[in-house]
Image (cartoon, rainbow, N blue to C red):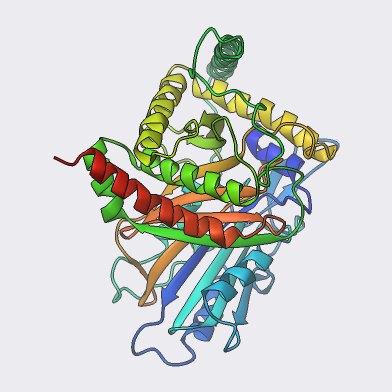
Length: 463
């Protein structure tokens, strides 16, 4: 038996049919040159033979009046209930058709009576391609962990043909180790007291910073939650139905801007998103007079730590005040992110984790009471950054051309954006409710905003 962390438990408490709490990945692969027409169907059949399912993919959630919610090993696992094969029809197998199909797969909750994961093998894409859509409950792992596990199951060269599905791997952090009999009780108590103390001190420090910012004794030291403009198409009551789209920019172009402006990848990406979101909102008749506020997950793991589960915090970040100059926007966002970094470094991870739970609980309560259309949201959208492999990976000789994380929607946010770098490309993955109009246009605006930023930086640094 394994108990849940407070954050992992929160994903179950917050989960509804309108807002399921699973994360997913979409892998688009090119069939090997000499592969026969049955390559993808045979891959699906081979997946079904990997019946030795490792933790956490062999665990089910248990709720009881006699004990805290906890994980238990499943008595048996029928892979046919977790692994599925689909073939898209000719004429309905282009990129948009794939995105629409994956959006439908992303809608239903995972069945809590079984281990909380699924893999869909999607055959018949145009250009001799196929895709894998895999989803797991967020309580199993965060996006960074899931991307790492996925990469570990793929090969570095096309001639490495061994198949290693993610559920058959032994993942660090999930071994069921018994505590040593000689472990002293005082050591455990001291560790718990220390963690609680850091948590209380961290929350107290954050509360003080929020108070100073709210009464304007500091400026941009920390972004305030629940002050964003509520009436935009990006926010409101989360409803069932999903849509998905992407944008991509070559990392070579991103790195050129970074080198000329001494910026980070986050600075550049958020600058493009800020410009794209403002243009998208203007299409909908909304012209914000204040900075867009995003929610941004931060990794709370220490250097080299590879534990499973979730170890993240979510903080608010103000982007740029309104401006028509992309270079000025970049500088403003750089200033804002430096303040965020200072704030994170000054607060214990336990404090940020507790702050995440507290603010998330307030937002979730508003959603459960169906007040998200009237109360201010924590932010206008959520943006996360998941680093991926720098080189192409392979699956049974098939080159994985693209890899897109697909996340869940936080309370009161109708859009979630995930940045993912893979094999020389920076991908922007956009998942939204199907009520958000013209999501594909926002993807187009991201690429246009990047081109405009390139030109602005070139002009600013012209000799």
